[in-house]
Length: 185
Image (cartoon, rainbow, N blue to C red; front, top):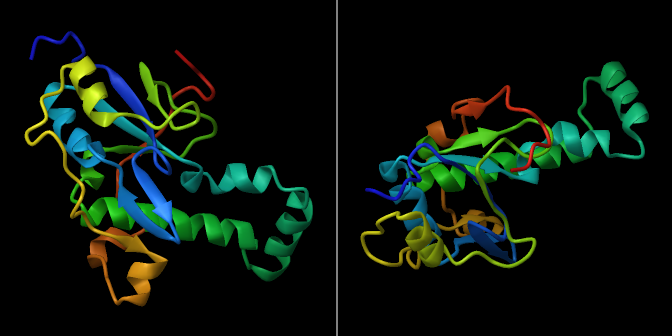
């Protein structure tokens, strides 16, 4: 590996970037799973950032944040949007754990985007994982992977799919902390 990329940090969005979601079912985008597996072997750090990881951000943007906070302190019941955010976060963690890649990622739970050298997001366009791997000098073993990957989501739950017990343990994964919020390179 002489790519000069070793030690770089790549921040990756989840929905629409690593996975496509149709009808509540998460599916790997072509080449995404293989990239996640191969990048750390090339010395690249991977940070996952997603709105699924930011219950505090979702709550802070709420028009009823003050009322929600008062209700929480009176009843002990978190606001619905926080419960939904927690559910989406656990769905993401379970999906990554079932695929065996959760331990390869730092999950950013802070506000804004994490500090990184490169950002991969679907805002401008869907990423081409095979082209990105080639550009960064990441050697992919099979050229494309993810067609027969695990499926997690509403449809999978209805079909009786389950995840390992450790996949849903709160706080069981690596958490990136202390990076400056909102820093863009």
